[in-house]
Length: 253
Image 1 (spheres, rainbow, N blue to C red):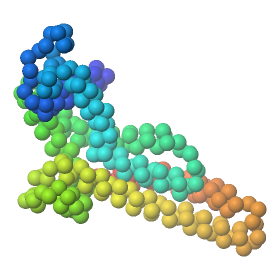
Image 2 (cartoon, rainbow, N blue to C red; image 1 turned 90 degrees about the horizontal axis):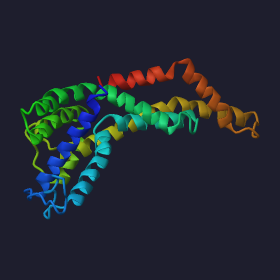
Image 3 (spheres, rainbow, N blue to C red; image 1 turned 30 degrees about the vertical axis):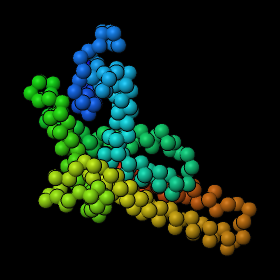
Image 4 (spheres, one colour; image 1 turned 135 degrees about the horizontal axis):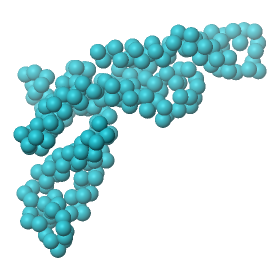
């Protein structure tokens, strides 16, 4: 697995470079004066190597954000932040812990999709059976199918209207331009719905504690100081992390 990682990075860079060359137009002959020893000319109209490197690095920088937006990472992170606020623990668990947990769970959920991409796109490209553009087209299909499984029709209709695209005959005909933003909106809505449900039992505890402390005249001690240990005790007693993660993972089954 460790040996294949640099090879996958180089393959990804090759795909990005091919896309940039196709966007910029026909490649120009190599300029040995402008770029001695490099075969990277043709990225732009003037065959400028620095501009090609800038475009490639920009795309590689945006790639993680795009990939995270096309996975369950958004929903998971929203839910975890809502849970932390409901418990009233401020910075525990830390942001790094929540992000790491969301990433691990995202990798776990996306592993079947990644295996399909490896079989249908990356392996044939490494064997020379297909070119880079065919690999990108084949690799995007499993990701689109995953997103279409969880996207809401209302969000798809919204972006179809904004994009001024005709209504397709079937969901597979939808473009990624419509599916990706619609999927992000659907995941945000699902994350906020689950977060609101998580808030309710802890909100009840806060209300009960505030009512009791006010009725007995305990005004010197803030209610949150008493309710936070009670909420943590309840969360630990019911094995909250196991219940929460199990429910979230089963919702993607």
